[in-house]
Image (cartoon, rainbow, N blue to C red; front, side, top):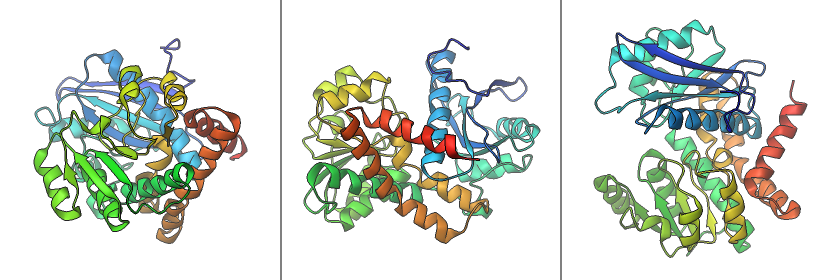
Length: 342
């Protein structure tokens, strides 16, 4: 464990097993800071436990950076529940996980992520005090997440094309779920030309009907002839092979862990493709969740989501000035902020 390439001095990594319900989960707490750590619960299948471990370690570290860059007082954490949420998710399993979280006494607060819903948080909340994203707290955070991604995308356009006016720019959106669909709405209002793809064809077509987007195949969207690519599905989409085939000038999306490995940030930079780190631009959901928990007001949350534009511009400027990938620049900036934090 300590030699794992993604370990990065995590404070706590726990393998959670409940035989009666079938729960198999890994909870990674990267940093706790002054009021504990927070992060979503991802429920998905993995090819191996090693793949799940790598995913949760990367996600929890990114969560620490996300919260620091957003000015939030929590440390970063994440949970992956291993299994198919369509067939293996049960109330008993979710409650077993909730009892584990509750036993931590606030060290970790959980929230929805890929494969979990507001209703799932309600179920977990029946036995757990430390859960966000429940229906009585405001529920789904896809709307603020999409707004943050949109603000980041405007900053990327400003950096690459000289203006944050998106009129006439072609944006290829991978994923028509909650974030992708709402992002498409913002882009349509801003006058962008939109391409969209999703394995759920009906979701892509519904978004297209509302926004005027053009639906393309899932195997086409990453390599579409567009100005900006916005990945909003699962991560690890950019590796040596896919990066070589990209036609866009910039990337900005809400999916977590978009880079397959740390070297892929340099590969994008070497190709002249500007990439906005996912944990920077998709922070709107975490900001909204903190407001739900009473950490700050709704007005403060809106201001922090608006500030994603300025922070993204700052990171991209640092990347250019120091001749490093945006990922390296963002991590360094986050570490500076953490060093100054109480």
